[in-house]
Image 1 (tube, helix red, strand yellow):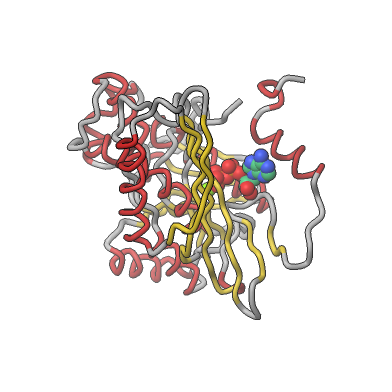
Image 2: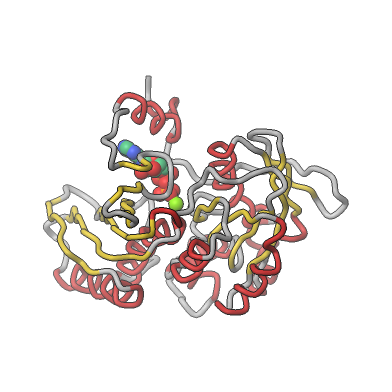
Length: 331
Ligand code: ADP
Ligand code: MG
């Protein structure tokens, strides 16, 4: 059977089952934002990898090598943030056509190093091979956390509140804008969010340290698609109110002309790299204080329900809305 008929997530499922069996040091293998490996009495390692491929994840016309370097590390550190961890180090594998300018690769690494410096991750190795066509970049990031503080996707319970950090949908609209204008004008807030997302490391760490998030994931595939991952693992459902979605000023300004529908990019657009997390209702006040401390909006957009696997999005009149195509998958 062809992979496109199997689908990305089913494929991962098949591979996970085929290769099941982990040593006792593996606290969590396949299935969360990062694997969790016991490394000391009360400390663990978080391991995650993400690959960016030219033509699939980026186009060289839209982004400079510097920002591509930053983003390629940011998406990995975002998975460390989603577990509540602290970035430590990363390795980088590069497949690059022999005709590529040296300058491009140096700028790519300058970008990567700038983000690494910002979040305290050290480049400690990698691999370099020639690619027949197109650049591919794979980064594996390693973080650490206190074992009893790691936040998984599977801890959401009915009645928990669903929160999202920052604003959602901007990255998708930024990409639309780049595709229309065909140039990388980073002055626009939407384009900036698409080209230079920042991992919510401090926030993720603080939520974990204070035991405030019952489940957490970063939004890479799209809000609803990533919420579904949380729900699958938690055996629960969710009801979301569209009117509560945090939409930025630029989003509201450009959304209808770029996408036609006010809520679709926020619900289904990917690559915002915001944190989606669930909170016991009694902790809502603490979340409000944390938002102030980190200078980031933390918005309650709905709640967890007992209906396993069901996501209902309610419109302004409290009626369920049909969901547009959900999130990004590779096959
Ligand atoms: P994220 O969006 O957080 O990067 P993914 O959806 O890419 O997560 O992956 C979900 C889970 O499946 C993760 O635990 C990841 O490590 C695992 N995974 C993805 N692809 C593979 C693969 N080819 N082989 C083994 N595990 C994989
Ligand atoms: Mg993730």
